[in-house]
Image 1 (cartoon, one colour):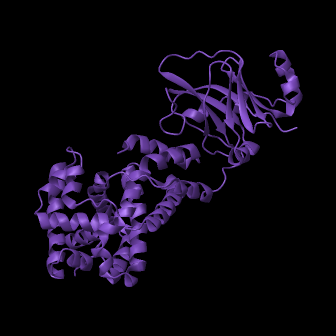
Image 2 (cartoon, chains in turn orange, brown):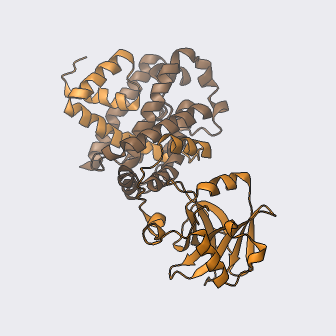
Image 3 (tube, chains in turn yellow, brown):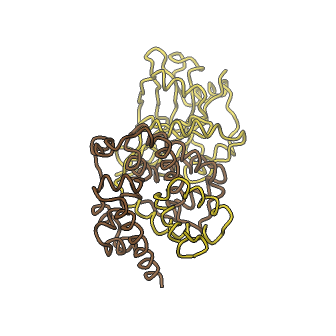
Length: 235
Length: 185
């Protein structure tokens, strides 16, 4: 085999990309690849040519555990978490909100005319505001019933063909978790499982996005974030 | 198949440590890439392992991706396929040819080469050029690529002498190259 002949080298590059170059021949070729630019170009051309075959494979969704392991392995995000893109950029509270003390939550609840005797202030988790900072929903833990409760404070605007979906933001750059669709009046409740309780503990807050009727089809927010609420800090 | 431009933008974001973009990249690209792992490794557990390792590498190497040099799915596909081939080569001595005869049992749907080629979009030069190949050459190339089979395994699976299989592949690749280059000029 004449390695100086460009046709031979190109044929080797093709078989290398195909995967049929084996054993000693492959190792010899890999050494060449490390030092020879024209061979690297050959390989890249063959990759460009052959890899579109992947296009024709049927879609196979991997089980969610694969993503979870990938996410764990890439480690926690840096301390200053500059999230970018779509959903994350619309979360303005990273930049403009101060923290609300639990006492302030109390004041808020009084202002909103809520019945305080029924709920201890420490159970309030967040107030979810619209983009004009008007309180729209109040979220709290109902320990007696083991539920996460959401009460509508002012009726949100909602056009036909849409729904409002509530997301918990677990923090640390993790993907938002859907808590279901929000009502435009009255109260709604979500069962507080121990799994949800675990995530709640360290969560940053809540966001509400505009979705099609029935909620996001993808399991992640697809529409704009119209409302947000920072988690009250623990007492 | 996710758009190249979208994947390119997401990879650029990954290079800036954007985890939300990385998850979006995973959601868009993993169905095809997992399908590739299943086709090559024929076992769910091994396919999951390779996919996981590949995406960790994709995250780590995102800054080195150069959109001028390869399409995003090619760049990611190379990472996945190299790991899958690596695993196949390490396991090969233990695996008997019987396992390849039992291919159908491991993966619920096995794309056959002609279906695969038909599955390519019409405006792809690759589809035209593969269709122009004699059937046996096309079959050998598609099986080698998508399943990671060696010459010896192809020889067994296609029930054809080793020398013949090698020449099908060599000739097939040669003709493919001329066709693809012709398409570009």
